[in-house]
Length: 428
Image 1 (cartoon, rainbow, N blue to C red):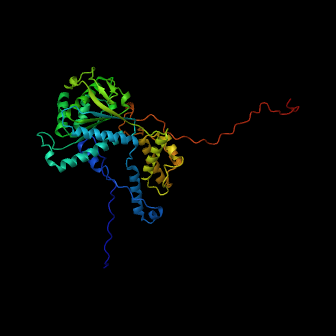
Image 2: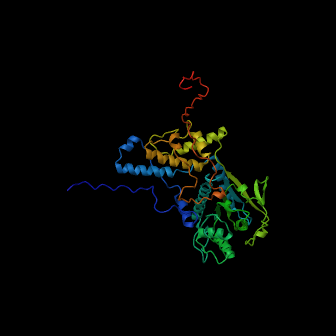
């Protein structure tokens, strides 16, 4: 009988998840996103020689982990997102510490499609909730006592999306779905439940995404915006996220105060508001902050774009790709032309390119390889990514690769005026 111990089974693969991704529009899904957003561990970089020494099964697992690393690359901060994060962080923190019974200033995050507005806002809000919960855990006496008839949970941050066809009822349902709260028998009951849920669950920040799905020529949409404004007196910081907010019509009833650099709103005069407090609102204030794409027209803009590319290439796990793969030579200008400096499109192109580089065995990113990739902007057959093209959530940009000029076809010589000599008698 052998004295050898049985070989230990291979460790489970820690980089795969089972089941759907977290649904941030529910309390449970938001908490899962908040807890797990920084937990992914990228695969360790190894050389091709080290890779070849692995057993076939370990090579297969390593390739799977490499693929997971490429589709879970961390979100690189940009100079534009840093401005948004700084303003949002200070606005939420200042409002959360305010004691007086004044209406809290809100924030609008504006930008084009695929520019990282939602991810920037959600990660900043999750960071705030981490800090807020830590404070309450250190000082448990600050926790609110459970209220009869409500779920015993604390939700410092709530996130919802504006329905594609926005109505006050639809928005109330989206907010109540986050808490798992009952809707109510009518709209007035739904509004009451929304207000009570926000207070009962100690919500400090309410994120409303895709706000430019509101079309202000529709009465329902005007009433929905009136409802949103009415939530500002609930001691909650409203963060509205949308595409091209200044041209959406949301600011039509307001004006920009150059002194405070904020948008000031008068109450809506059209529509039939179901919000009993709307008529008393003489003004509501929001800061409008833009999340723009990279600018390639200045030295500073080019340097920032190249720095961003360096951050991405440091996360690449291809055996033939090293420093400068994305950030040197003609590649930066090529990537900017393909993506127009939009971070979401850059990420899409890089991910698809990395998949192709692994599958083809090239193990590198080149312009020739990227030329074979088309960036699909939400128009993939059979797939619904929830983006509303009419609301501007899909950028109207040309992402097709520039075709390289091939050899010109040889042009035939015009022989009409050629001297063919004296025709023979037979030809005459």
